[in-house]
Amino acid sequence: MELGPRAREEIRSRLIEADAGALSEGDSELLWRFFRGIPEVWEVTSSEVIPVDAMYGQWSEFIGTRCSVEPSYLGEYESAASVLTELYGDHGTAETNRFVYLEAAPAPDEPTTRLEHLQKYVAAEFVEVYLATGGFREFGAANYKGFVAGSRFRRVKPFRSAPNGGNRVL
Picture 1 (cartoon, rainbow, N blue to C red):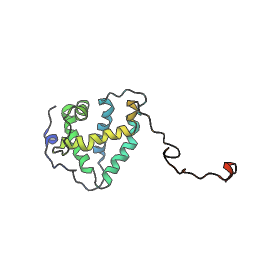
Picture 2 (picture 1 turned 180 degrees about the vertical axis):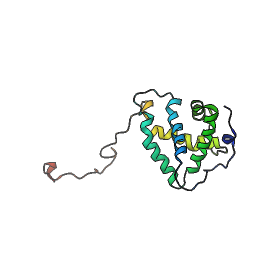
Picture 3 (picture 1 turned 90 degrees about the horizontal axis):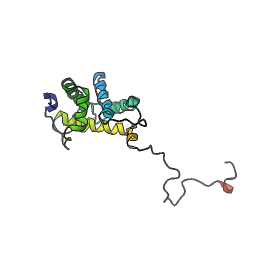
Picture 4 (picture 1 turned 30 degrees about the vertical axis):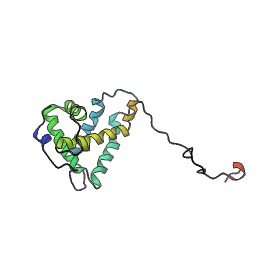
């Protein structure tokens, strides 16, 4: 894929610094469009998977939190939106999403271009959010139901026994 100047632009390797704040509506819509591309790129077909549009609330809360607390990801998200704007304009949504999520060389540990920042700080996290909010079902996993009374190796019971063997109401 031919990359534009914004995607190739070199920047420092650590997190793009920005004060905590809110993401613009336009950038938020663009990043949501990018997030929605995950099941399309992965060709998710299982009826067990939560539809990606049903994940919007959790995704939106995640994005809001990442922008409003330190260290803020606001700078990373704004940079990612600018790269996606360029790539979507040049190559379209489907081709861009496929390239960023699957085909581009993996981002190095210390990214030096805006595209590498997009891959490491945005795309990788979006995949984690997708899997955590229901995408795991595509791979046959089920939600963990929890456990009662803790570990089977616990020596002390995590509850009190009722007097008289439990025959009396407390």
